[in-house]
Length: 529
Image 1 (spheres, helix red, strand yellow):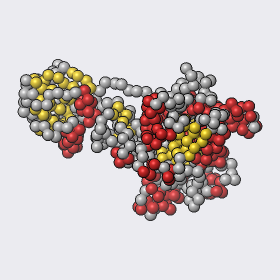
Image 2 (tube, rainbow, N blue to C red):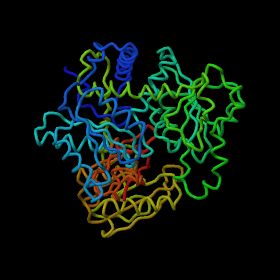
Image 3 (cartoon, one colour):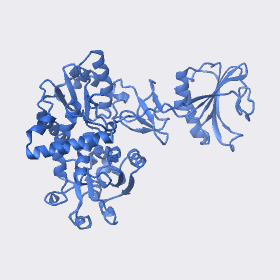
Image 4 (cartoon, rainbow, N blue to C red):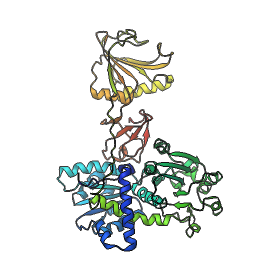
C-alpha cells in the first residue's frame, strides 16, 4: 500500500486517527529515549537527511515556541528550511493565499507550516495546491501543517499535549480526568481537545471559566457526542470547593484584549477566576500535574512562577516534548518512517443519504387538492411550496418564506405567499408559497429548496393537477452555490477576504451545519448571503 503518511496535511487533530496518533507517540517515545542516551543509530533512522527536501515556515501571526520548535525539528532532519518574510511579501500587496503557496510549492517545497489569524487556511490550501501540483506534474503533493489558525485549532500542540498526558499516565489510555482552565473561548489549544482526547477510552473534562470566556457550545457538544463526561465551573475557587478534582490541569492565557471595553473593565475579576493562587494548592491532589501551552503572560501568568520548583510542574517537560513530537511528525510526512504502520487510517465519512424524495402526487388518505393547499386559489400551471416552517410562529414563518423566495429567485414571479393553519396537523401554522407559470425545477434547484426549506413539500401543477410532488429533508452537505457564506469573518472562506474559497457545510447530528474550513456552526437559515 505504501507509506500512508507521505504528504499528509494536518489541519485539525481529527485528520489523524487514534491508531495513527498512537503510532506517532510510540515513535516519539523511542526518539526521546534515543536523545537521552545519544543513540545515533536510532536518531539517524528518523532523519529525512535530504538537503533538497523543502520545509517552509510561514508565520502570519507572532509565535516563539511553535516556530522555534519546528525550526529545531527541521534542523534535526538536515533539510532545506525557509522562512517567508511576511512583512515584505506579496501578502501585503493583496496576493491570494493560493497563488502564494502554489508558487512556493513549485520551488520544490514539500511541507508548509502555517500560523494565521484566518481559520481553515490549511484545509483550503491542501485542496488548492493539490490541484496545482497535479496540473503541473510536481513530484510531491505539498503537505500543510496547521501551527494555529485564529481561535480554531492547534493540532500539533494537541499532539505534544497528548504525548505528555500519556507520559504521566504511564502510557495507559484507559481513562483521563482533565481540568481545562482559562480562556476556553479563544484558546485554540483546548478546542483541539474536543476530538483529541478520544485517544483515551474514558474521558472526564472539567471546564473552568466564567461565561465571558467559556468554551464555545459547539466544542462542548462535540465533547459530549464523543462520550466525554463534561462539567462546567465558573472559577477555580468554585471548582476546588467540591471533592472530585482532576489530577491533570491545563491552563490557557486569558485573551481579554480581544473582547472590548466592557470586558476590560472587569479584567481583574475575570483573571482572578482562572489564576492559580498559592492557597489553592493544599486542596489539589498532591500527585496532580499542571500543563500550559506556554509562554505564560509576563504580568498575569495563570500559573505563577512559584509553581516552577514544585512537583506540579508538567509544563516545562510538555514544552520540551514539542520538538520530539514535531520531529516524528515531519519524518512521517516525509515518508522516512511509517512503512510499519498497521492500524486504521483517518477517514472523514461521507454521508450520501437521499434528501429529495419524490412521492406519488396523491398519497392514500390525503385529500385531492387540485393543485392547491389550504386557502390558496387553484392554479392551472405552476408550483406550490407547502408545509414551510410547520408549527412555528407566523412571524418566523414569514421571515423563512422571504429567505426561500430570495434563494430560489422567485422575487419577480407572479403569485403569493401567506401563513395558513393546517387542518390535518392540530391546526399548526405553516407557510405556503405559490407561483403560477413556474413549472420546471432542475435537480440543482431542488437541492437549493432542500437546503433552505427542509421539511417542505413542492407540488408541480400542470393542467390543474399535481403532476409531481417532492418532499425535502436537510441535505448532509451544502456546497456549489455562489450565494453561500460562512458567517465567521475570520474564516478563509468568508467573502471579505476575497480568496475565492467556495463555501461548504456539513450537517451535524443535531441538524445544524458546520463550515468545512473553520467548523463554525450555523442553522440552515444563516448560511445564505
